[in-house]
Image: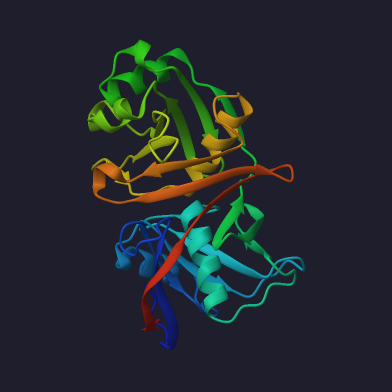
Length: 283
């Protein structure tokens, strides 16, 4: 990394998709990232050792309230769900005032994303799917092997690409989802989200788990981008009502709650956020 002069910048760590701090999905946010280059952002995102780190910048689009760049430890994402909600939460907490009351417009690699404040939660408008449709037989067989399930246990499987290359797998029940023991080798480089319905009265409607390939298979605590794609798939096919709540992170000891609503011609994906660490960073 090229040596540059360091400066003190506001820094937050935010827990997203949980009303109880430390039971959701953490996010690092550099509030004032002006002057930082891509290399510096990537280096810092790798250092935080979190699934994502975001960098807030002034917008370049006239309709946007702010711009965000989203990095994992190894690459930049054009869009991701929990970084969108955590960044919007932090921007507001840092004194940001949106151009339109109650609605923020985020500029990111995927374009403009609307974020609304409703019922004490922030929710983003699910971006359009850039690849959608059934997976091929070979991929379906790989999914079954990677999830350790018989082929006929997969009620459906579809591409749900909205930046990340997600594949959605629908199972018959939440219990089946919770019982999965993935096979890292068989899964290969597939990025997979699995969803199954809970019984009525469970307090939540669906159970979700997502698996991300790498040197070792990583299970994400709560995944906004996958849930955004899954909502469009499930509501559009009549498998889910126009408003529902999904649980994620249960196997990891988390209590993620994703609130989904179809309204105003959009699919809105929301959840609570809480600031857990607030201070400065030399960067």
